[in-house]
Length: 396
Image (cartoon, rainbow, N blue to C red; front, side, top):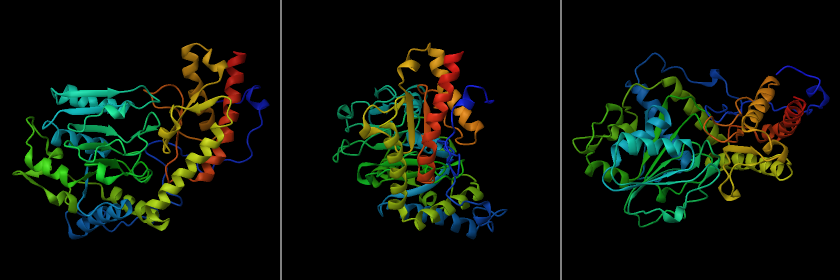
């Protein structure tokens, strides 16, 4: 945005974030990242070579260790990012029982569409809620399979804990945790399938997903044969038995070994800062800075209506200034876009406009690769940008 008489009248904050990268995916690389830090010996070689398998096994083993995964849970690298991992779970596991689908943002709604319109299951209940809210978790029926996102990446609303999940459940819990894992505490005993991608909290590169299976999920895979055709990239069984090589580095299709090396680099960094505890602490500090700012803001509020459900990764902000709420709908929608454009022009914050399907607002990534000092430095810039844009809209 070009300088105008209006925006030169507002003093810019003296301190800038050291990194302007606050995108919610792909997310900021780890502090100090450099391509020169990546091992390259495997590049140009087969992923099925001894070395290739060793590198894939290393990313699996380091992931398990950082996550404190139970010994009897399996973790494997699969195609097509978190989306591929979720759809692999839906196509492979559903159909044995009725299913409860929870949706309160765009990705949860996508999984509902897959189950209802693509798999065309007969016995589906959809429990949904508007952006900023959760569905009634107390009405979930755990005699059925349950599919949900732990954190609504596009809504900034998360489930507060796993207390609502029944210990004596008969169905499976299938959890898309891509913007939660490594940043929020996940109760493994409550979760049968968990999916994620490296490009979120670890700041890794895209293209590959990760799927985690409990013993209950493995039992379902080996006892249930779906009635629909199964694409190769979704197949986790052969002859009624789990293809356990997937969880030892024998990937279904050809992976990018450069992406694998980048994930190993991110996991080593996680280990260096204290493992999962260190990752959680950084993310909580980022959220605390935002909360302190929101508590005194006269124009911004969290999109999450209940603070207990507010995300500490995909932190979504709505504009609540009465002046803004009195504007026509198109101008209300334009406000956060203008704010994000102004901050991008200043190279202060990149990619913070809200998700395209979400209510108009801003979305700031607070995952562990983002320095808490950068979140703290960003906040006065949000006030500056809002004041500038408000003045321009008022003068128009």
